[in-house]
Image 1 (cartoon, rainbow, N blue to C red):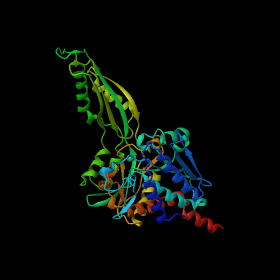
Image 2: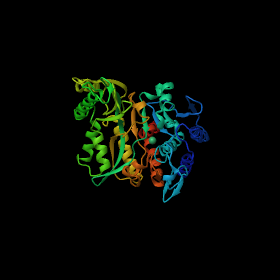
Image 3: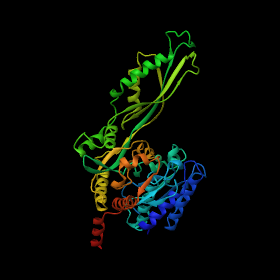
Image 4: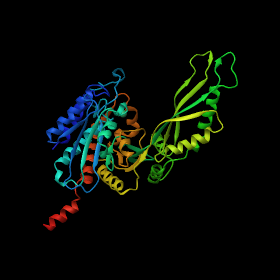
Length: 437
Ligand SMILES: [Zn+2]
């Protein structure tokens, strides 16, 4: 059985593999995990759109599954780092001042290794499993996932339906109004991209006429942004639960206040624009791409309706380019209630005093491929207060990414305990059976 010292050593070695998205080292990270699994006599399967960029899948089968499978996902690719801006080697995995330094220590090699630790320990008790447990480490997450999770889904669609998924995005502690909370992501916002376009009469800049594309576009944008607050669609269930748990709308921690606000609002941002080519020519066409970030439950039609309404009477036209719906794993479902309870107990057990608080992930993750199929997806890589959300957030994709050794060990222990509770036959059943014998 893997112990915590071995797990920490393996984590450091994984951090030392510079598996930057799209580089040949992604494969090395995959081989590294494959090798550990085989040491524990667990076979794994490479799922690869291109042989050079494999994803890794392994499973512990339950003899008689009673519940939907648990899937432990994470990504082993990382964004690059600029060594000149780091005090520690970007891929050094150095241990100093009680921390482990290196790219991927928070996004998401720590999660890969916490999950692997718990997975290997379940192997010892495979006969007691009440549900199948999958370990899935992917690449290309930082590059859009077309070689990673999206590809895995295209060849193994059945895995993505009706599962309970452990994912990145949450597990960070946060102090709010003097109390500590463990943030658990339970959903993600949807993203819609739309092109807004206007046409007019082009010509030389010395003689601008009345029929100008830019003016028409500007008028359309003014109307859209002025109406942003009227875009009220989607679910505020997560935000309501956050309010309930904290007992107030007033959150003193600015990062926490942002997270709270984020869970209640739809927003519109400008992504790209194309207006004219030369300064002395009035363009005949002008267009911008807008990105709508919308609460879970918002449909494409909701946004279409908004655009139809706001653009009526203007001379601009729109074209929806893409829509990825959000998802929300309801906070009042029994599976989640149980998980939250187990997580509360485990956190307390291993040194974190505080309550679990749900939130929406601050961006999109590979969890979206499961959430859109109705699976329950939870972002959970539990850390201690020394790695609280406000401390951790600037380091993800930033400089000197690092994790407290104690946080890493805490995460392994918590993950191990909640998976044992969630995946093994209930103790009570077992005792009953023994009595029966
Ligand atoms: Zn990332």
